[in-house]
Image 1 (spheres, one colour):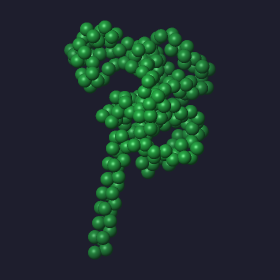
Image 2 (spheres, rainbow, N blue to C red):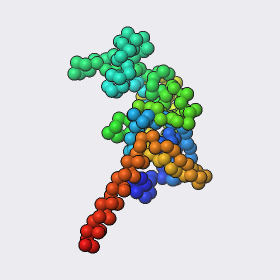
Image 3 (cartoon, rainbow, N blue to C red):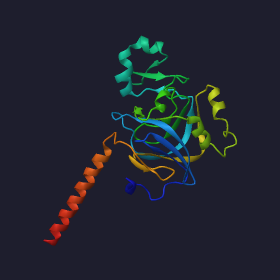
Image 4 (cartoon, one colour):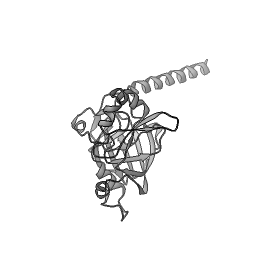
Length: 235
């Protein structure tokens, strides 16, 4: 997969290995911090993409996607949802949508890292911490849950005198607010089932999404077409 990436990635970036469910922060093209993550389950794959993080939402509410609401929440019944703290709001089209207000029990936790992408995925905190102790951490709906979101946010606001060291204080205010970063941070969601660790040792993971198999088939088919074309030219 490296052949479809730039030969030189931005020196300062966030890089997520979806298959290993690990996030690594790079500064000066060197890994400076890693943390466990929870990435998409095989039925809710986290997409590969490249984008830029421009802001962080502190104490974010969760606007429940229609697919999740239909599959997992509406079957519980309106009364149960309201008792669990969800809000049911009218849409301009006359329908209804579900919102989970900001707070310690919000599915997005206390921090949400936004970046433009067509898949509506992002990095975020989570109140469900148990999965971080597991080896297999592919269990989300497609977004990337973070083990240490506050530490990541602090690294992103370094150099801003008004924000540096203030992330937890902003969280403690309890207000939903969007914090612009002093500079954009490149983010890459990548899928590596074989990769070198910081000590140079090779690591291997399973192919949970079956993307290795699919890519190998496409490369083999392309090679066969190229070989057939070469033989035809010789004839």
